[in-house]
Length: 233
Image (cartoon, rainbow, N blue to C red; front, side):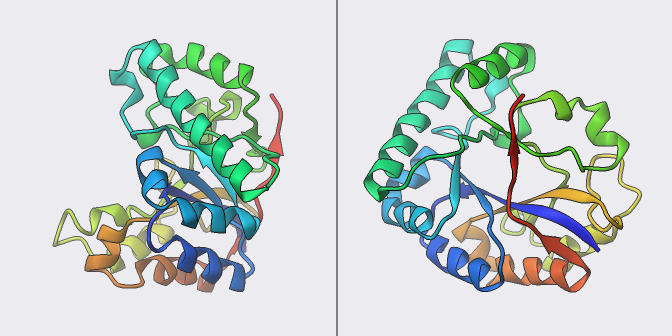
């Protein structure tokens, strides 16, 4: 049995309500990372998620590669999404207890990384509790000291609409890879992981019900998804 946080990138969409309801029915409380351009299009779905007790984190406004931006542009990406999230929480009448951030593509800003980490800390962002994560890769990359929420396992289901030779079965096989050197491990006994999956209508169009097929497959193989916990650094 292994434990994992379920994190969902690129919310919200026209399927967010279905995802929220289905996960809660399974006793799973995910951590969702919202992107501004999608949140603006599906505002009511964001309200719905908050009212059902889901935490929405900041995933930038336009989902850029931060290493390709200036420091000022990077800060603007964070701030514009913060403005939307504060407005969303206020409209939903839900207290925003935890502020969490994830860089798009895991791109922490290149040579701006330390300055962006300091900026996130000054804004009061908190860290997903990763103290129980096992495996040398996570430590070697220095993620224990970083404030943003990285991951240890990526289903890579976002490749399905991009590559016709890549299948849902390929996504499933990844959870059995115990020798990965790039962090893609999930089934270690007594381990803790951070699982990444996306809320993408374009993936649903080519692989119907991909989201719950993958989540249920992980559960059937002994993964227990637990509610997110946070620490201060």
